[in-house]
Length: 249
Length: 89
Image 1 (cartoon, each protein chain N blue to C red):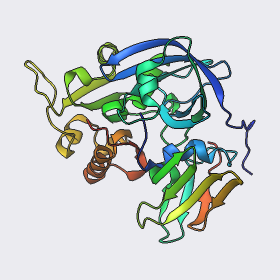
Image 2: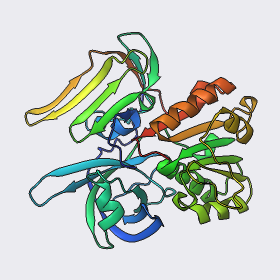
Image 3: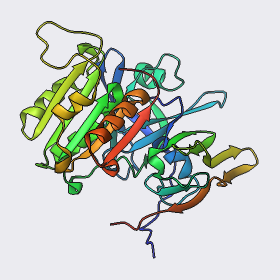
């Protein structure tokens, strides 16, 4: 018998913007206060609904960037030129603004410290957001699970959370490897090409270590990486993927 | 992330929670077209204010269609042979 512990209907809640953090020229983080927020698991997302004065509603899903906490949730949003919701969230939203949100949503692309590791995270562009929630939770829980993030960005200026990732990597047990696809800055020590099998093999853990693998980014990156990871010999059930629109990295 | 093109079952989670008491993105869904087994979070899907569409990654069968209409909520699962939700560990 499947026990449903205190089933909670997924309801729209009011979120108030408390703080806005510029991450890159196209990406902002919004720290939200959501009084009824029950907490979440790293990797989950929310639906955001905006209602215009004429009643028109637009709704999109956004990954949660913060480690679980009651009453607070941080979203990191990339501005998509033709988007209906992201130009507001990534451009116009100010502290004090309110909008509707529901969540947390998702039970597939999630990591909690008790799942152990090693943890191999593969990100393209703003696909790093749910993976950052995992790294923040790992740090908050003082987990010693070995973790590696392989993160593909267009240019150095497009790297989201760059300073925080450096700081987290300095605390041990976490390796962060960057690759840039449209720039080769002087003195750059990371990769300068798209994520491929050789990169995944040299940066990641061997299949025998049974790493939990999370891949998030634009659909072509996710599908190429997932295929390469299977070819390397990683067990398909350990490879979790999350795809989003063709914003590229 | 601003999800605007057909993506995967993770994005359909919110719309599906309007009907299902549990989060079903980790549930196993068996395609009635080809018998493929997958977790809903892993297969191609669309989710939004209008509802959700979940497809088979192997044969493209529409396994599940949830739609909001002014009249009410429609759930069409002709393409699903079975849905399995594991007991919590």
